[in-house]
Structures are given as structure tokens and as C-alpha cells.
Amino acid sequence: MWKSPRTGGLAALAIIVAAAPLAFPNAYFYDVAVNALFNAVVCVGLNLLIGYGGQISLGHAGFFALGAYGSAILTTRYGLPPLAAMLVTAGGVGGLAFVLGRPILKLKGHYLAMATLGIGIIIHIVLKTESWLTGGPDGMGVDGFSVAGFAISGDRMWYWVGAGLLLVAVWLAQNLIDSPVGRALRAVHGSEVGAEVVGVDTTRYKVLVFVVSAVFASVVGSLFAHKNAFITPDIGSFFRSIELVTMVVLGGMASTFGAVIGAVILTLLPQFLTAFEDYEAMVLGAIMMGTMIFLPKGLLPSLRLFFAKRRAAP
Image (cartoon, rainbow, N blue to C red; front, side, top):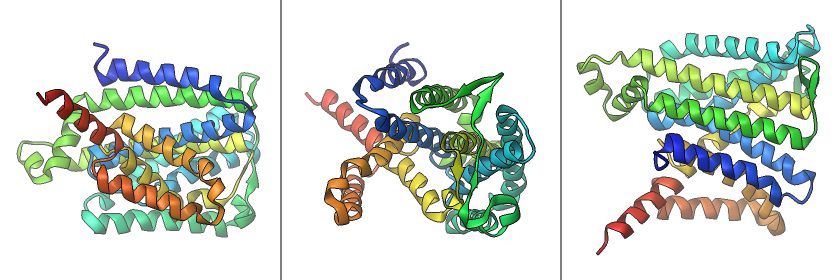
């Protein structure tokens, strides 16, 4: 039982996130860790879309930004409680993903990539130009997050919120993967025509996973906005979307825990490369190129395959 990803893997992840603060010497490490946890949750949802559904999205940061701005506007300007604002925004983003997903997910390959890229760019432009609502390029302030009068403040408290959210996200993803929906998604990824032949409603399942991944991003965006107390349209930029996709690919597509690892590595790695100053981007690019060349399936699946061969060797 403990060797299965649903139980053993989740238990191991819980132990790691519970023990990690023991190595944090100050509040700055908590802040970086919270960003890593938030990125990991978004990547868990995005991995369902890319790794299991086989559908690329180059505009996912747009849903993250909509979650952030939706909660910011509803709480700051309309006085909605933060939790209610987060849920309303997630529902709105999910509805938007459903409406956009039905026509867009009929596309394949680079056509789908261009369509999702267009969604992200449109969202980014709207957030920058509609200054009366979003504050424009200067951004806008956001109220703190509280539930029933209990305020969540400080990096340490936000760390545990992020850790709990990640465990819930991984648990939901693993259960979805092991359900009939997950089997249908793998069939669609393997061969869409073959899946349709055996009776799988491919459009329905592709739209479903698109909506789920968008809701994941929206919820994290809402919490990110409340934690940082200030947001700008740059959180929904094209480069942010590419960063999220890179995290999923680096960790290993079709691997929930691989997506978590990829998100954590690419969030923490720039912190360790600050010593290289002007060459930081070059070193980061070289590390990623080396990983893709020598571990083409991503970090976790490649390491899993390596150790499996070692065990099988006489």
C-alpha cells in the first residue's frame, strides 16, 4: 500500500513539507518556499492537462492572473469576504475555461498552442489597459486573507497554507488519475482517434481537464494576491506561462510528483545562482539543456527508469 503514489508518495510529500521548515534560518526562506508551493500547485493542475490529457497550454498564467485580480477586485472594491471572493472567482474562471475550451480544444498541435497563447495575451492586455478596474500597469493593492475573523499573515503561516493546499491538490490529482476520467484522459493522450472508436467522448474529457487545471491556477492566484498584498499584470505574462510549462516538462510529464519537483527546482534554482550575477540566466539555461539532453523524459520518470534498470540488471 505504501509503495503506491496515492498513499506512500503522498505520505512522503507530507513528511518533506512538514520537516522542511527545520532548515529555514529566517523568514526569507519561508517566502521562497511559499512561492515554490504555490507554483507546485499550479503545475499539478497543468500537468493533468499536458501530461495526461496531451493538451498544451501557453496561456495558463492568464488564469492565474484572473484568479488574483478577481479576488483583489471583489474584496477591495466590493467588500466580499476573501474566501467567498476566491470561490466566486474560481467558479468564474472555470466557467470561462469551459466556454473557451470547447472550440479551442478541437485544435491540435501548434494550432492549439497558438490559440492558448492568444488567450493568455488577451488576458494580459486587458489587465494592463483597463486601469479603471485593475489599476493598469501600476497594479493594485489587495486586502489580507481572513476566514471567520482569523487573519492569515506572516510567511510562516502562509507556508502551512501552501503546504496544505499542495497536499490537497496532489491528493485530488492522484484520485482523478486513478479514476475512469484519468483512464479516459490517458486514452485521449495515446490516440484520440482510437479513444473515439471505443466510445470515449474526447471533447468532454479534454474540456473537463482544461477547466480543472484553470481552477487550480485561479485558486493559487487568489491566495498569491492576498499573501503579497499587491499585484501587477506581469503575473499573467507570456513568460510566466512558459515558466509554468517548463516546470512541468522538467519534472516529468504525466507525473504528479514530477510536476511538484520541477516547480520546486525552478523556483529555488535562481536563488542559488545569484552568485553568478550577469551569467545567472545562461547557467540556468545550461542546466535545463543538460537535463533535457540526459534526462529527456523529465527528472522523476528518468530517475525512476534508471533505478528500475539497475534493479533488473544481474
